[in-house]
Amino acid sequence: MKKSRRFVVKDLEYLIEKGWFRQGHLDEQRTCLMISNQSYHQYTDLMKRTKEQEEQRKRETSGSRNPQLTPEVREVIRSGEAYIQKIHACNEAIPGEEISAKISRMEMLVDKIFDRVEQEPESVEDLHRLMTYYLPTTVKLLEAYEDLDAQPIQGANILSSKQEIEKTLDTLNTAFEKLLDSLFEEKAWDVSSDISVLN
Image 1 (tube, one colour):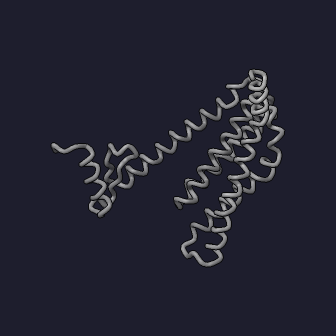
Image 2: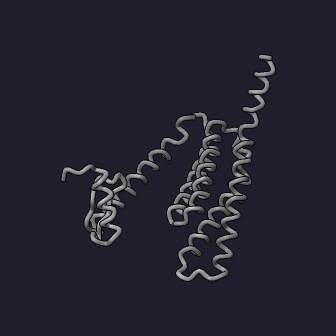
Image 3: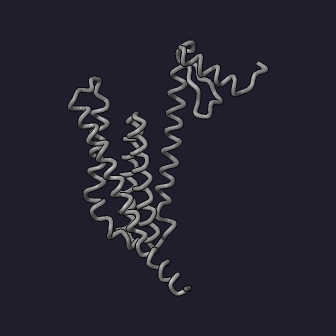
């Protein structure tokens, strides 16, 4: 066509947006045009399966980096990863940009908390409330939001409930930040001690 790749991609995006390719879709890398919904669904299914397989491999190797983990700690980490998956699934299902950013932050914080437990297994004792209350309640709220958001008519009660959940996510993220920070308390003491000795 004697046109740059960028030009062609922009042109195709414009044609798809205008409905001139009624079943047109571009892949994630913007390198392939699919001209039927069937081929696009096959592509998205393949991408989803590939991602799930990668996550499965990560889960299978989780804990192997620290072979000294007890069965109890391994179980806590496994449960934590299951909660992270549920949070991620809710984020995928909820389209709002602002709430999606909050959920993504939450997913990252919770993931970091369990990474820390894997590095310092004795810190698992600090996760009792997280495992028994905060994470189950978080998932329950996200699933409720997902259900409310899917309703075709957004009345006052639905909008009010969604706003309450969005505010609560901010509170939960603050709590998760504090918990993550507290897991580094001993490390901070060690650093202070070392610096005192050096001084």
